Image (tube, rainbow, N blue to C red; front, top):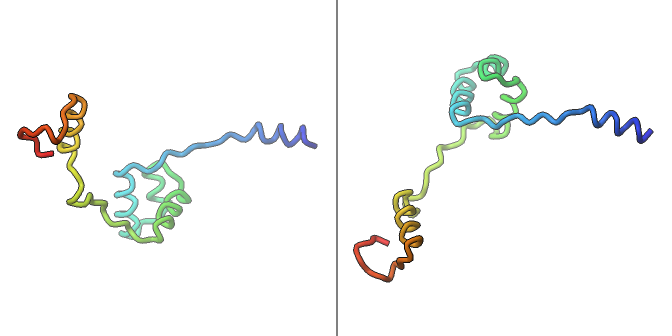
Length: 100
């Protein structure tokens, strides 16, 4: 019996479906809110209707708010400037015209 179970399990392949891209997410929400069927949305995106339904249900059927970084966080440019300074061995306490 165990031999049969191992043989059956070895025949089952694991299928990994990539996550939705940002563009796909926007399209799913736009079309879902417009009333398009999951089947039609999935067909156009190359996904199953079940994956569209699961995606929408994972958010409780409510489109999530756009993510925005707090104004208290450093910008990418500021983080890169600090990183370059650290790599060059400079410290913020060295003075100079650095804003950090």
